[in-house]
Image 1 (spheres, rainbow, N blue to C red):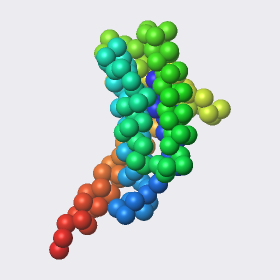
Image 2 (image 1 turned 90 degrees about the horizontal axis):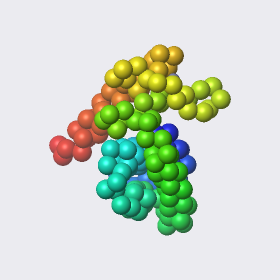
Image 3 (image 1 turned 90 degrees about the vertical axis):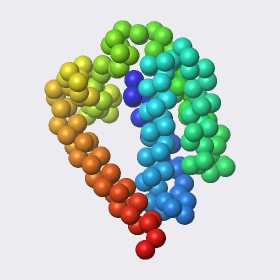
Length: 156
Ligand SMILES: [Zn+2]
C-alpha cells in the first residue's frame, strides 16, 4: 500500500519549495513524505473513520508548495488516494490482522513495485532484504543531521 504514498511523494517532491530555514529542501521534502505515509497508514488502519483523506493530506502539505502548484498538488493527492481507497476496498486480504501491508517495499528493475511478501517483521522480501539495511543507515544519517541542525539553532 505504501506504493501510493511513494507515488504521491515522487510526483510532488520536485515541486517542494524551500524557506528561510530550509534552503536544501530536505526537511520540507521529509515532511511531505511523512504526511503522505501517515495518510496511507491511517487509511489502512482506520479507513472507515477517515472521512476526507485527500482534503486532510492536502491541508497538511500545501504550505510546502507555491501558489501556482496548489491545483497540481491537489490533483495528484486526490487521484492517488482515490485509487488507494478503491484498492483497500477490493483487496482487504492484502493486509494482515493488524492492518499492515504485507508487500515488499522495493521496486523491481522494471520500476514496478516488488509486491512479494516481506520477511516476518521486515519491510522487504528475501531478495530485497539488503535495501532495508541501507534505508536504516540513511535514517541514522538523517537523524544525526537533524541533531546537528538543532544544535546550530541554539544561540551561543
Ligand atoms: Zn522484494
